[in-house]
Every structure is written in structure tokens, then in C-alpha cells.
Image 1: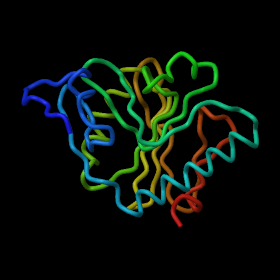
Image 2: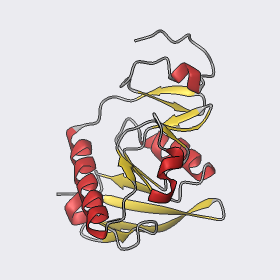
Image 3: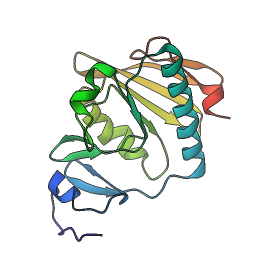
Image 4: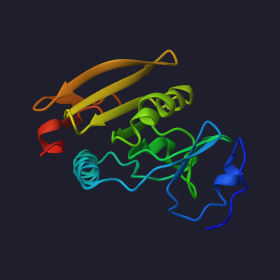
Length: 183
């Protein structure tokens, strides 16, 4: 791994010196290290990915989906949502070597090591940069919260728990089926 000089504030240029796959995100000019996701977290990402990809294919919607990819918001924020969706009409504008701009949907799965960042700092960045829908999945209590952007601010659209479902506002007709996410 390339050495990154110890600083009080890091930028995208510093972040790009890290080896690909290094367990860091750049949040508010700070390099934040995260351990590898646990098996439950990974299983939820896989199930969620399958549900969304099947829906997109069935409805022939298209767009860009990814898990744990760099999303550059500004010089001090490069986040890696657990899963994201970008509408087809925006895909060509922001999907490059990394995502340069806001996805339409950002999904985070909580774990003890990242909950603070997902619930506070990352949520604030997503809100500031206009991510239309922010979904927080809590595997411990088996809930999903969907925050929608209205007038530049997030409001809690709905919170659901297993066995309920939660309808996406961005992907009309798609429901987060908690029975399928939390098996």
C-alpha cells in the first residue's frame, strides 16, 4: 500500500494513493477504516442485490447498480455504500472509473463498527448531495428505514420490520421484502 502522509485533513487525491480495496472511506476529510463485512452483512447484500436486479430485469428498467464502490461527492467525501442504484438517464453522466456524483438510492447495512458513520456522517453527506432515497438496514433488530429527500432534507418515509415490506419511492413498484432480506 502506498504511504499516505499523516494529516489532519485528507482529500480525494490522498484517498486515490491508497491501494485498491484498502478498507477506508473518506468521510468529512477523515480516512475512516472499516473491517471486512461479517457473513450476515454479506448475505443481506447478496439477497438485496438479487431482489433489485431481478426487479430491474423483469421491468426492463436498466440503470447502474453496485455494491461497495467509491462514490466521490466532493474533495473530502468518498463513500462506499453497501449497495447503490443510479437511474438509466443519469448513468452516463456519473459512472466513470468511480461514481462521480450522487446515486439515486444509497443503501447501508448497519454493523457495530460502522453504525455511527452510517446513521450520522454518511447520512448527512447523502442528504447534502441529493441522494433521493437513503435506506438503512439493521440486521440485528431486522428493520429497514427508508429516508426520502424532500426540499433538500431527509424525512423518514417509513420504517418496517420483519415480516413487513417497504416500498421504494425511486423504483416505483419495488418493495424491500423483509422476509426475503432477513432469512
